[in-house]
Image 1 (cartoon, one colour):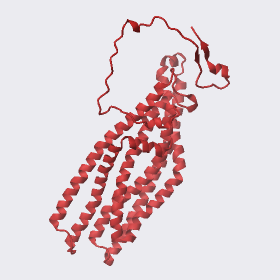
Image 2: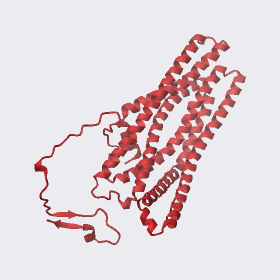
Image 3: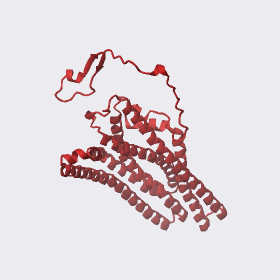
Image 4: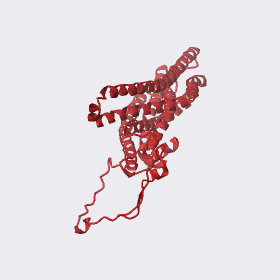
Length: 382
């Protein structure tokens, strides 16, 4: 399943909640840009620029804009918590449903390197990774709308200064694309190493007496330290690369902002840039810089989410990738469905069990085995 198809199907499942949350966070971000417009009007009023708004009008609009931004932020946070809970519940439900549908007591396949410890790590970390990217996507949409408005207003004031803000975006995209393959590899190694440690801890607690009888405590502890060291190294590589992209994004934006301020200072001295225009740019710099930083983080997170989606599909082992995000009720806010009571009678009592032509074939063929061994049993009746 392609990563883009996964996120599209996920958004379709909760499109109303996602649309409302995106609208709410967009209202908050837009209020920040509008505050720059009001600040421009305020300074133009102080400077006596003809056609500027009256002071009372500017103050009233400031209060109204702050109220809209606060309501939007509060509503977005509330919907974000609900969205995260539904996201987790749907993935837990779909993965557990496919696991419990498999016959026997061995639902995981060794050929996919899925063990109980790895599965625990997938349920905990990989679901969280995809959920974080989905929520950040909604923030990015709001930031993009705000930046678009700020971009138009800044262009109307000065094309040169505006380009000084947006040029760093090209650098961030280029660097992130160059590192994308390594991001994918490091995240996969980190997840596998963490799953290995979790698996060993689970096996230790399940075989305490066996370890004590065999006097294997030193060897087990040494193995745990070895796996933990591999996990530590993989986690450091993953985190360092992710933080490196964040640093590149942040520093590139900082340089762009510094150039913008230098250009604006010279324009003010030349008389082509007013104090009100500078206030507008100062208020517009934050959403622009935040968008530049978020683009780099989202591109890296997309690669990491691809690894998480592949690992979640390996747990299900259905051959139908869309089952991971199959829509369905999760009963977080809805009433639970009634469970019908079926009264038993004497006719339900089992007296005789007859089996005819029973066959069983193992799912996997172990190394060195033959087809007759894999067959198990065939045509058994009793």
